[in-house]
Amino acid sequence: MNADHPIYIAAREALLAASPELGNDLDGIHRAALRAASVMEANVAAAAEPPAAADPQSERAAERARIAGCIAAGQATGRARQIARLALAGPLTPDGAKALAATLPLDSAAPADALRISSVAAQFGGPSAQSERSRIAAILGSAAAADRFAAAASFATSTDFDIEQVKSALALLPPESSTRAQTIEQRAAGLAEFGGPEIGSIGGGRSSIDDIWKKATADANRSIGAVDPMPKPGAAPGAPSPAGAEHLAGLHARGGVR
Image: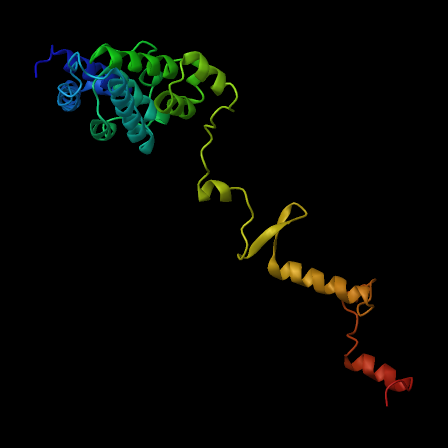
């Protein structure tokens, strides 16, 4: 496929929008664009304009199913917005979307341009398919779908609602949360850890289990009178020991010890 082929150019621009850093690697972006263009080109025949006798309702249903399948493949890999953008810009199939998703960053890490969906869809396929694709593009590219994309995609691909009906429905829903579940490490950060030598903070410092146990035991003894709440001061340096010979002799002299 030549570098001036419309499908190659579309694939190259989509990849550059999704991964700007590829612009510094000409060979890399060329190979990636060729792979993406090949996937899209393989589906051109399937998306070709059907004969005039084709049932318009069936044509719309087929186009809706194609886009819904692509978005589902993107949702399964965290790339729903980027895949939806590409499905509206070219004849991408769900199988092609799965293969293409591996070359794209996550929606959460993609630049804004890669997530921006045009409210005007590309023109290919039969008139009924184009009409259905334009309806879906108008919904997904609206401001109302910016923070309710999953709900907007569901309305667009599973109902016949027009843009105004979808806007009214989306207005009744809360915005989709972008908060991610915390990892175990994040949830544990800042919490006291139990089972180690230090289990908590007392008086602004860290207290060991032994210290806490000793304090609790002393408080319990004091509460039942087992410990003198006012301990006597220790003997002055050089004073005879209560158990020393001089002390015992004095007790004998006073008849204190028999």
